Each structure stands twice: as structure tokens, then as C-alpha cells.
Length: 201
Image 1 (tube, helix red, strand yellow):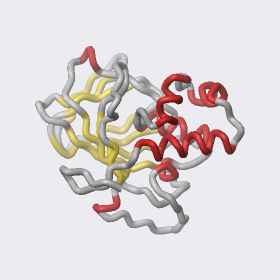
Image 2 (cartoon, rainbow, N blue to C red):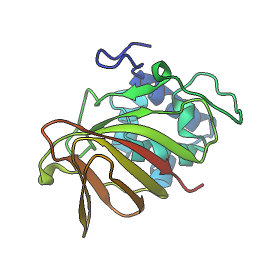
Image 3 (cartoon, rainbow, N blue to C red):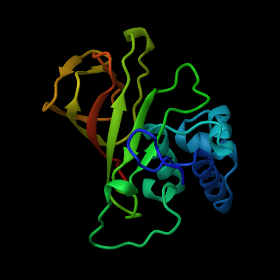
């Protein structure tokens, strides 16, 4: 697995995620249309994910995980062993860079999975970098579950359809993630935050 030049963390091979999605789908005898129905993700996007052309953002990966009945960790490790205690060293974190074929309307952020070994956990801890952008470029997403976010660096804006909050380092927010929501950095650099996602089983 190749290394990130910036922080030395492994960068996941996007084709590996795509191939695992395809293998799981075929194992369950799902057609692409079946997966469209179960996730609400368009067939064209699913095709690009399976072919490795795009890396799915967190909300999309959570929907795929639920539809395919696996935890997100399944997509990051070759062998998963369920243990009561799981330690992830800094060099073991999986970093997902911005997708090389970024499409208009896709969420634009970088995230790292902070736990990649426990296959059936109920929470997904992530380190996320949110990019600076104009309001018009913000992409709103929603998925079942709840989220907790703690800001580490820079200033982050959180928006829903009818609410806006500005979050500074040390601030946190907890919300039900079935509402449309989006984030953007208000600084000239990416804002970093610890995000914990709980996806309803």
C-alpha cells in the first residue's frame, strides 16, 4: 500500500474498495439495480465505484456497508478478526484522498479511518479534512444514524437546510444525520475534525 507524502499514512487503493463492493454484490446475487434500490445511489455512481474510478465518501460507504451487511472496516483490511480490544497505530490508519475523477456534485473531503480492524463495530471513528469552498459548492448529504464532530484545526461551518453553525477548534456538535447536512472550512486551509458516525443497524 502506498504512503501519503504528507503524513506517512497508507493511502487506500480505490480499486480495492470497488472490487470488494462488486464481489459482495455478486456474492449476494444482487444486480446493480438491486443495489440502487437498497442504497439510493445512482447506477452510474455505483458503476464508477466498482470500477475504481471514484472513492466513495463516508455517507456513500455507510449506505453500501448497510446494504451489503458489513462494517466499513471490511473495505479497509484484507483479514478481519473480531476482538474485544482493537488498537490502531498511527501508521496503520487508512487515508482516502480526494477522488482522482472528482465529479461536480460530489462531497469533496479527505478522510482517514481511525479503526480498521473490528468488523462489526457500531461506531465509525474518522479524521476528516473539510475543504474551503463557496456556499454554492457545498454538497448536502444524509444517512441514517447520528454523528459527533470535534474540531481540531481551523474554523468549520456546519449547515442544514435551515440552520448554520460556526465551529472553532475545541467546539463540538452532535446531530441526527438523517437531516441534510454539509460542512466547509471557513479558513484558507482545510479544517480538521474528529468525526464519529453511528449508523443504525
